[in-house]
Length: 255
Image (cartoon, rainbow, N blue to C red; front, side, top):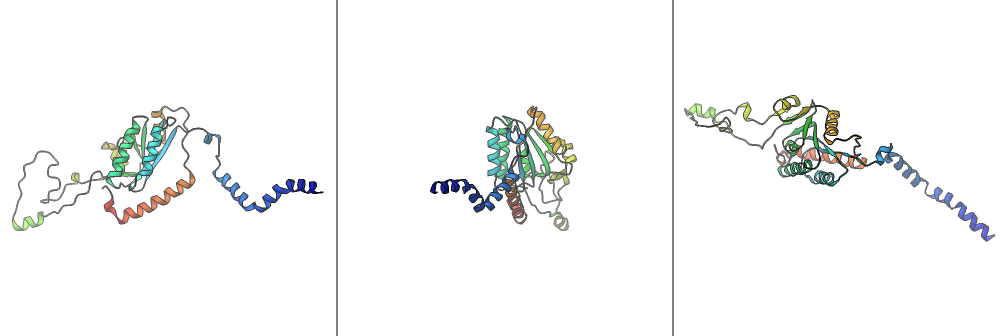
């Protein structure tokens, strides 16, 4: 009789386990269904990588690590650098720019401006093989911030006139004795205007940027990296926090 009880206990053990852990098993099943690969391509090694630079540039650690990883990864044949950033701190922008420069020595990089590529984010992108901007994007605001007074009205009242000897169109940029001219100020351009002045290579959409990279990388069967959904949510929250910080503390930015 004891033997029969032991055999019966062994046979019913899985049923008891399911009964005791039913909720946990349902939860695990839901997680598997959500995050499991949807097609066989997800099991293959990707040969193209997309890296995003979204929001103000404050801490470059995560972006620099991704650039370094794809630089060392022999399976990655090209990188699409997606930018939507108003700029940020000087040093992090320079770090990203030089990381991309090192990357382009091993594989092609195409920058796609999907929103704003200005100030530090434009600086970070200058070493890419090609910059393609969305028709609705804004490009420019290159340089650093400088403020100055215009005392020409006061000088007129007290009868002072200036005389200038200069060589070069921009030698008197920043003078307080007159109103600054339009070409002496940093500007934001539409994508079309930026193309005309040579700031970008093409005006196009994401499809065009991907196609350009596939061609430069000479990839016959493009397989793109899939971003982890938890990472994507975390990045979105981080970008929103950074944007709020940038709004209230604009002095942190590279104008």
